[in-house]
Length: 385
Image (cartoon, rainbow, N blue to C red):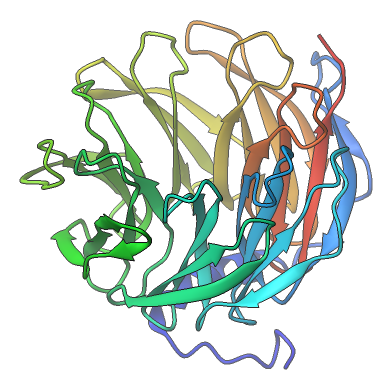
């Protein structure tokens, strides 16, 4: 079935259609564009890997246990997750794909059963399930557990939420206005989901300690209201209080980093329709103010991540825009100021980014999943100081 023939059966996938609508523009030329006054970029587009249909979310980690950073990517229409094993030099073996569920969307990597190997957690948006694919120790995923996740789960985030030193799982439910949490009982066993209310249409979720009390809070982005919702962890894995911040419109992804280097986690949020990436600076106690607004020039920025582009210890930001089919880098100039540096051709419809040292040179590389061209593009960092 072609993409043009495909019929969306779940209303929540209308948000995904925004990416497809953005794909009618002319494909970009095969070159890197440098902004006026900017230095030459440290990134270069290295390799493209074809995967199954409609890859959406990409994650990176040492899945094979060989000391190198591998790639996992969800394939929405194929209902599968694809694994790319790193040869050790930033190139990857032929993809291996594993069935997950209907409408595989979000993915996260973590050792979920305590055997020392990274397992794969996948949110199945059309199937309303969370799938865990367990790693047998050499990068092969041999068994799978499916759990009811709620209505239209999108992304996946993993953290120890209740303080028992085991990684728990949280997924936002787009239709249910809630987030489902699965508490890790040990040995790969999880509790039935416990749901907590959020803003309408939660799209992405992130577990991170925002107020410095040592407990991971949960942040969700609301696509419909433009609100950022924070569920505050009381230390037991319960979330009795919430805070909401009005950020903008059509909130998509959220990422964290201590950009200002004050010891507190700041937040990076993409606003799909407005063409804006907003950086929210943390005052140290979980209070936030808008510090920077970055613009790609397109109207479809859907994923942003912090990374160190030039190796100077300051965290820069990479953004993919589905409307322009490009990756953009913004250089951290200190003091909360960013300068748009360069743009790179991706595949068609870039939807997410993962950061890892794929080549083993100690530098941050990037992997981009491209929804429309059914591939993953790897960008490697050079030796630019």
